[in-house]
Image (tube, rainbow, N blue to C red; front, side, top):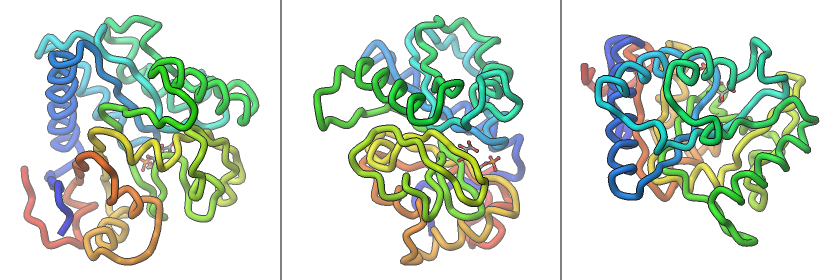
Length: 248
Ligand code: 6PG
């Protein structure tokens, strides 16, 4: 059993439900505090969510001027590279919405990894007005997971997995033979809301292990002790090894 899990018949139904949840959460935060922070995930799964999000936000009259966009991680490529998480979000969402440029806090991945991480960390510290050892509280963090249980670019066995002091880490990912820039676990676990977006049969084993409460300490397990609420959005294929009934 995974607390907070909703299972959907397919990716499209998941994208619709997740985007409606995100808009509700953002709107509530803006109503309460005036502004909210949304951390976008990369990879392929969220693309459909972002495409749906722009329509749901328009229908609901969401004020994107009250939303600050951040990224959970980025590949070490320029922002117009086909593998860039920023580029994917720009094409699927950002170029279609009225969000001020100053609200879009992308990871400057055109710089060497360590410099990109330092610049992003400085921008986060400035945005949240953080002193020394303080950790930001992002309002809503979107995450995917790999079939190896990584989240953001925190891969099992990587230096990012054990990073406890930095907010942002530049990490070399052995299996990909490339550098990534990622928010660290202490930051992800400090969010008010975490939304895991998981689709496809390749993720079924990871979800089963999360459900079984397996003792392994994969990064995706580590967020189970997050401070805030965790919402899991899975499609039928990803949930195929679980016993939960479909939500929609
Ligand atoms: C990235 C993501 C990464 C992603 C998972 C799942 O930069 O790739 O941040 O953590 O969420 O790898 O990727 P898919 O959605 O493509 O399966």
